[in-house]
Every structure is written in structure tokens, then in C-alpha cells.
Image (cartoon, rainbow, N blue to C red; front, side, top):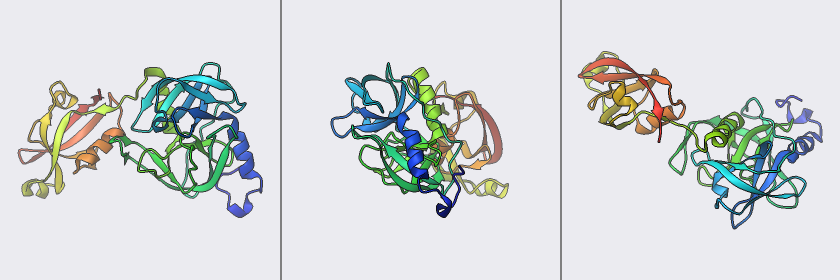
Length: 299
């Protein structure tokens, strides 16, 4: 069924069918002293959950759709995306399917299993598709979905699903002050792969300290931006040092995208991968120049 159908053309049971299709892959996660949270079965013995709702690394339990209580362990955490990966020996059942993408205005259901009484759901739409987003923990997440669906207590870690029951994103209220956001399914699945493989997510590292400055008039006349980032420090052994970046350089763009704020620089890096080469547009000694730097991995 098309997920872009108008509300008037949607069969009355479409949402109930979508929730029923998603329900077997949604589990209850008992990882904190207060109300349990939700999780998504993404493969045999593999659950994706909300990091902020896993307050202990021991005595974790998962309750599956059949009511079985199973011991779980943390395979890895990623505070930047508020995702955690749990290994649950003996947990099987149908794994959730990721939707190919989400569109603003798309009808959805937020679904959780916050206790033993079964799944709960609320109706909404995709209100916005955006990112990068700087989170309350100081990290940057590459993409987010905003929804007006009500995140009932215990829904964090559960999915928002389309009319076919496919996962559009992983719901969390732990990124920005309790606001209901979702990590897009494609990004969440990539994070999960990294957590189950390495226990962490590799993020790009440049290795500079910067501050915002106005670009000299002569450089602006030559086509440089009005503002940029003055390099005030280059870490020893960093990709920036290896690429030839010097203290006193003014970075005005990364891969042709203007950068005049330290947060913008971090946002650009959040979208990059370790080992990726980036082009830096600079002002050095009043002259425009360019460098290519191969990014490293953040420790």
C-alpha cells in the first residue's frame, strides 16, 4: 500500500494492520529502575534500543512478543544518536524491516511495548526531516525525523512505522530536552552494525582548534567568504597536521560548503567518515588556497 495515500483513501484497518505487522519485532526492555522502555528486534538475538533508557549494564532483561523474559547484555552504546545495541541469546522471531526513507507529511504510527500488556501506539505524521542535529549530550547526529505522534512513557527505543509496518525511524526523547525525535532507520541500522561489530561508532576527526573571525578585506575582494574559522591549534599527529594545515590559516569552506562557526565544522565532520578526503578552502597570508585532508578516526 502506498504510504503517500490521502487519509480519506486509507482503509479503516490500515493502521491497525501496520501495527500488527510491526508488533512481533517490538520488545520490552527492562534496563532502568523506573518504567521499562522499548526495543526493536533487527536480527536473531539482536535488539536496537534507546541508550538513555539503559541505565545499567548488568541485570538487563528483554520481554519478547510472546511474553518470554530473556537475559540481555550491552553490545555497544552510541550516546550521540542515543542508540544502544543489545545481545539477547535465544531471542528469535521476525526481524523488523527498515523503510527506504521518510517524507514530510507521511502518515505513521509510533509503537512501543512499555510493559507486559502488549504494544501501544499513537498516530502522527512525519513533521520534519532534518539534521545534522547537536544533542544535549554534546554530540552530533547526522539525521533526525520529527513527528507529532505522542511518545507515551516507555516508547523510547520503539519504532515509528509506515502503513506497511516498516520502520521509518527509532523513537527517542533523549536527544533534545524530551522532544519526540526519531533516528532514521537507515542511519539507525548503520549504527547498530557498528555497535554489534566494534562496540562503538567510528567518527571522523580533523584535529584542529578554531575560532570564528572576519576574513581580511583583500581576501574577501578576491572571492573569499566574509567570515571563517581561524585555526588556533593543530593537534600533533592529527590529520590536519598531516594535510598541511597551519596555525593562522582561516578555513572558509569544506568541500565547497561555507563554514564560519565551530559548530558548523563539527556538523560537517558528523556527515563524513574516517578515511574520507575533504577539500578545505583557506585564506593563508591573505591569499586564497586549498588543501586536501584525509580525515582520521576520533578516539
